Image (cartoon, rainbow, N blue to C red; front, side, top):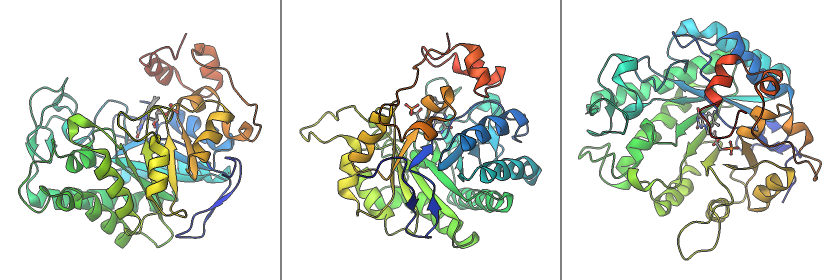
Length: 360
Ligand SMILES: Cc1cc2nc3c(=O)[nH]c(=O)nc-3n(C[C@H](O)[C@H](O)[C@H](O)COP(=O)(O)O)c2cc1C
């Protein structure tokens, strides 16, 4: 398989990406209270574009004001956010990166203490750490939510981003609609597999209808979350169905691409998705990659892009070095001083202290 440093042409649009390195979405808590971007957040992300990443994804950005999962979260729900978004998009483009905004809604993971309203989900759900349970969205509200995603995507295009990543992973609202445990609806939005995936499909169709043909739409999923009722077999089916859904690629969030799946099949996650998909359908796989050898492993498993998170926090120019097969940059923990030099503000460094063994 191609090395991660080689260019790639996205088949649906013919848009060329400088290399196969993608900066995965990373929340960094640096946005203002009203969801608008701070200069610190723009600076940290632009530095990764400067560091050579072919595709740079923003932090998860909310499509509604009341779907927020945490403080300091990036928002794309209002026009007041356009100036910051535009500045960020311009900065990323200036360094030659393609830019994606990861759009999402917290659903059952959007606490009342932050949003002032009872959280919503596909069904009545509860989640550890949440104060009470959600209410199920009415079918009219589901349609409004689809429009909120489309409005957000339109805003991202207006700001100059190349596309969006629909965040269907990590137990947030899209994922809650996909899971059999969290979506127990009896209407057109729940029940069968086709009905549970309808929310995601409606978002894809609405975004496509309201953005220009070259605007990129990627979908990120978690292949397997038992407690949500996200099962691997169905995720593989979803991947195959996405090929026909007019999207630009699939991003699987593995957390550890080297981890074996607990069943009789000895293929790892990336390979299973690569085998299930046509050769030319872009697959991004992320989780646990640090060295150039790790990155090549992901490519050899059949991915078209290798996604990275933590290594790029410590090394903004990781993508520039990954062509050297012996590249194996310093591992965490990092000193606050090192992280500051790598463009992290004190707020972000403080947040990274919550990630085990990341900050000295
Ligand atoms: C600080 C931090 C924030 C993250 N925020 C998001 C997020 O907003 N959206 C998302 O889909 N994943 C998020 N992730 C997960 C990463 O995108 C990535 O999948 C994960 O870190 C595994 O990759 P890595 O081992 O290269 O770090 C976050 C990870 C980290 C470390």
